[in-house]
Length: 306
Image (cartoon, rainbow, N blue to C red; front, side, top):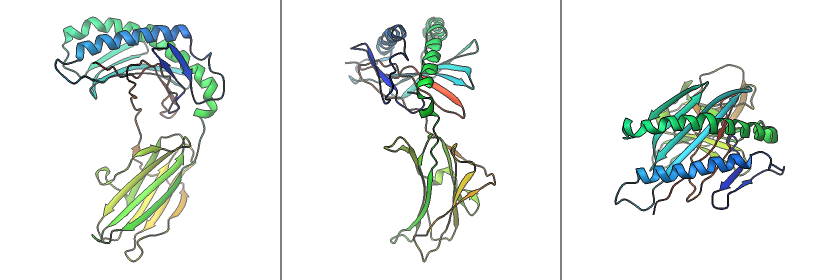
């Protein structure tokens, strides 16, 4: 994936990489030789790791996942990273940046079990994953630059609903139709940010390639002033929507306004999801945006043991 845009997939059975989601010809983006080298390594890696990790007398299907990524920011090369997870829990994380290699283990594997593979893993990150990932990232950015750099402003609504049975109220702030997906959405009560543990909500995709985020809060019959504040790359200033709660009017109109005064925002972002693909290896370029940071993911897989 390039950012949150699916640009292609690779099928290890047919050994074919297929571009997706764009009208332009992208057959020249990924070198077939690179695909062959990486896919062969990934399949061998999955077989070796899954056989080593699979418990005896356990369920027949066990998920083992790998995600690789690389970054480029302001035309400067960033890190390359590999993360692995087994049965939903992270096992280890490898990072190579500016000539330095780091490794973190989150499993019960001993140092004796890990050490023999570290040198090999470092060599693969530095000499295989890194150059291939950066080259693929740059090629895809040439093809998809307008798509990944587009800006769509959010539409923000703040509404209030009364619960007739309990006498309480439900306040909901919805920002929808925005791109890219990273947005700061904060709910204020009487001028103070509402604590995270009081709020429910998620970041979700819309069918048109944009995103929506909802932040909701339930409270007792006490009068408050609520403000929903949004900041986004498409906005020059933060967008505030105000709601004065009134027990006589369970549904109040909202007044959107653009303010130039800065406020403390809590960042609500969605991490890149690890996509499970059974019995298949994939090579998936991916770009994740942090400010102006581009990221490309090399692989996300699931090994199935029967």
